[in-house]
Length: 207
Image (cartoon, rainbow, N blue to C red; front, side):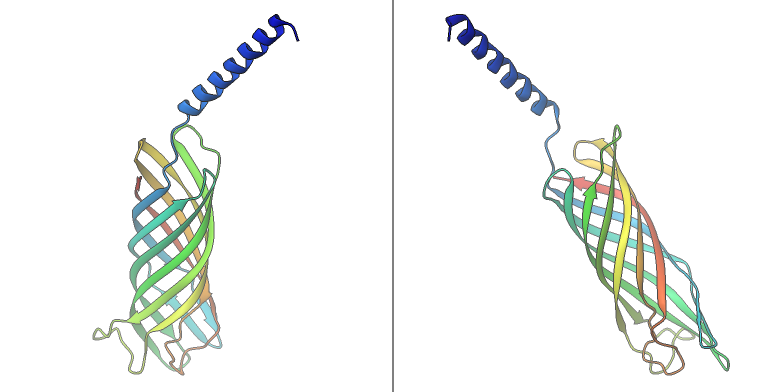
């Protein structure tokens, strides 16, 4: 190989190395950890079965989450949420209300989609549990009703809107599919599939 070819090859390699290094510097470093705090809505679809109509009052609550990014497109998250609503039940011979604290504990995998300017969209899917705990408040309780946990399938998506490097706003939708609680009351049917929609918005701290 001639001296000119050696010099040309070395120069080309140096330029490519410099360009790749410059490109890497332009790309913001990945923040592996996130903590989010959000306000939520909690809206459950009505159901009917065997002469019983069941309605859950619309309500709001909060959601706290931690997310770990394995890389720029895949992450895992764990969340805890709280809401309080009233289960309104109408049977053929009776009607009663049951106020409950609803605790949610879930885990999910998150896939980050290509960003659009400052918006970083994502989709998620996972599972967890919803715990329905009667409050026992007067006029909103039923003798014999006990706390009950229900396994839930979780799906959803959202987007983060970057404010500065370590702070974003988040808008999100999460959906739950699960068996509606019967609180081990003989008057309520079992095995009724329920769906709850949980829109939310809040802030995300990245580090």
